[in-house]
Length: 221
Image 1 (cartoon, rainbow, N blue to C red):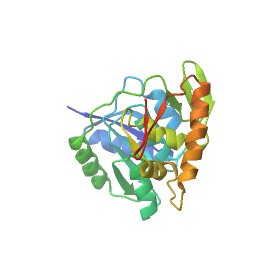
Image 2 (image 1 turned 45 degrees about the horizontal axis):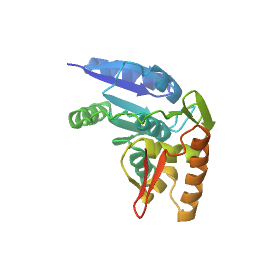
Image 3 (image 1 turned 45 degrees about the vertical axis):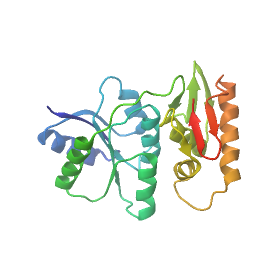
Image 4 (image 1 turned 90 degrees about the vertical axis):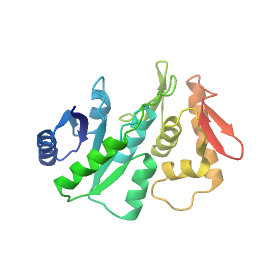
């Protein structure tokens, strides 16, 4: 059985080469796009089993795309491609929910071996959060036909919560996801952003969406 794969890479030459090579290696390229928005719009029933995502996309950061996928309940493994290979970039990719990381330039054979390893490990699908959804292109959260705009930090923070519906996400994990560049983030800064998020969710009729678990962290629903 062939493995269904999605490619998100804005370099047309590389995207076509990846698609051709992966098909020759037995993958079924069900989606091949240049932007994160196009990927999310095209997911439909294609159900990729693994994703290859470039970090430097024209409409978003690839790490934010991973957050948006996880927030939708997509648990298929993601391999990030990037021209930036320092430790900070790699760590921020893993914190966003990526499963592997390959700096450019790379050997195609290594890419294939990494992808096959990810597929063997696999991920079980998760139920997406009830009612709430994130719009990556518009940087909005929506519910029941209404929407509210989000700043990039608010988007990453809410995506980190929606990616684990029903689970308690610790404060440090939220800080790592919302501020991927690192640095010192004080507790009151996180609290301030959560308050702003709650106000926006309240305007959508979901004032109870973010639940505080005292001494531990927060969860959705």
